[in-house]
Length: 199
Image (cartoon, rainbow, N blue to C red; front, side, top):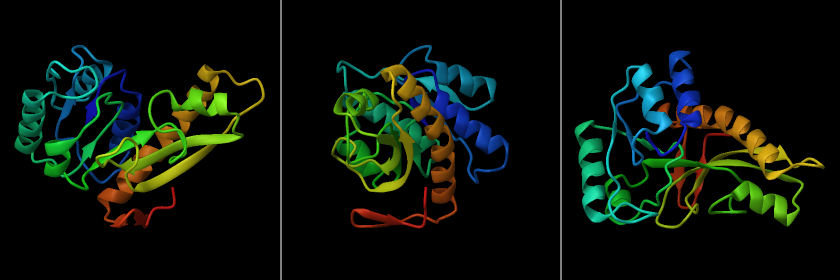
């Protein structure tokens, strides 16, 4: 698992593991932020966790950092890379090395509102529903095949903060269920489409 922040999605996944709802194990937790909450949550639960410097770029890993991340993941013999609030775009060699094996959760019903602050985009646009999407990561930004989605209504009087909080609750239900479906072999990718998980 890769994360940059507090680790709320990581906690949801770890809790699902502990409850026997997720047929997988955490091989390694990496963060590009020293002292990130996800590292603390991982350590408390006894998972191997460490900070790896991201390098000189603000929004992606530089070449040396990418090599270090790939080396650590290969050494840990990971089958699936789960992004849990990892705030850097993965491209090139990283995605080639783990092609079809990197998943992310995004706070909108993709393909609507890709990119940053998707809940604010949805609120500003005036939609009545938004939500969250688990998807495979490809070379685009939030463009990979969709694995599952969960809708969240936009309520009268919602603020960006209140809407985001409700989307996060949906994320904590959807992400463990989607990862469990992948681990069971229930999700198949056919071109841009997936099958086997209803969300």
